[in-house]
Image (cartoon, rainbow over all chains, first blue to last red; front, top):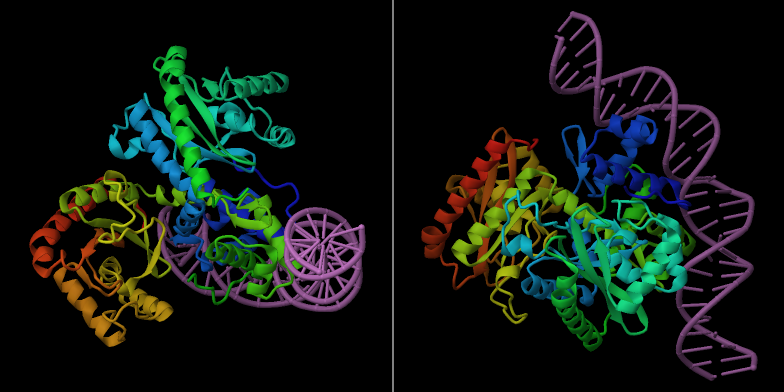
Length: 268
Length: 268
DNA sequence: AACTAGTGTTTCGATTTGCGAAATGCTTAA
DNA sequence: TTAAGCATTTCGCAAATCGAAACACTAGTT
């Protein structure tokens, strides 16, 4: 799930970070499991984990080590770092009220796209767990860009070489039958997105889920991120997209961008 | 702000982690600044930072490195790890509706207390920035336990040696004139808290702010965390605490604890 | 247009540091 | 009591990190 680096300059810290990833993926682990997973001596894992623990990054429950709350602090820091990200909450709120569908704001990070906004629905309408008509993105979740509306919207606006590098790095793995897996076809799709000004995810990420994504632009910089509205295919028809969603999405994104230029404390 | 370890077994990873802390505290930094701050050669810092970057933990903006969104993912993981933490959101919501004051749920981590719940007020009543009558805790924020109602509530229920170790580790630094800084006096305060069943923060953390905290207990384990209600001193009088807040706080915490024993997937 | 001061990046040898195998100690279940 | 699982410690060798200095690049200044 989490990509390993190709040339980690410092091997020891990279090993510690790999352990963090492993502990995350396992949802907690003990020394023997980690040693097995990463083919390391138990004593080696021990020293790494103790170090991470002493520095406050892991918590311990009996013989199991877990991701510690310290990451919450750092995560919130990352999220509230740019003022631009603050506006995202407002925009998500607006769009949710207007569309009553799942709304997300994502940014590009290391060639993938990551959810930065808390789903507003989570708070406003406390849903049953059984409400399978709604897809809800957890904050901090990473997605491949080629299979999401927001990702395509961003890719279409990135400099050509950046886009190419990202496609090289992550490829075009299929999530569903609709996922565009052919590179040539995908580049053409990006041109369509660029012409239209917004991207459509037509069950390319999850079966039964459609979405519309639009990049949030800055002047003289790559887009700061992208907003998307998504829901079940039977509700998000082409007509609904064109007549209902795109206009209000456009309005929200423009207001977002206006606030960005007024504030300007967002670096390149 | 962030404590350094006393005996970090592996020096190289500990150095990387110290760099993360430093970047966080500065709100982004370049190599020269970091080298200066930690008294390291610029080339050394370079290799550490590149490693953190390659592994996806940092983002780069020109010459500045920043905490990356990957921490959001790990933070959310830490937060949603225990089912018990899920109930916290419900409880916070309930208590907020009932009291209309700031409500928080915190857990103990490495001898401090850290906010695990999103403030419900943030979403329900979108406040003006000028609403200085409300104190709002950001998720992931750490506090010293001796100066907060929740912290005292937890300390009062921890095994004696744990409590002593925590006080040794962090001391009793003064936040306000009301902060209890004398160890003997503080131990007596903990006994009062234990008798009463709840803790009061009487402007010990911030001037003008009072709060009530109650530990959320499990059977045969230290408390899972603590809930608190806090607000301006003129509203949170002794009468209001005893007659309004404590009963509803008690009710919410009991319901919380009931859900915990029903679920039981929370380790020690 | 040359200069300067600030970046990040690379090189390379000395030596500190992390590594693994095995032994130890501790707890829990049989 | 025994056995199996765990974390923890020890120690010598090999390897990876470190720092100083040189390099390359950019932006702002003279």
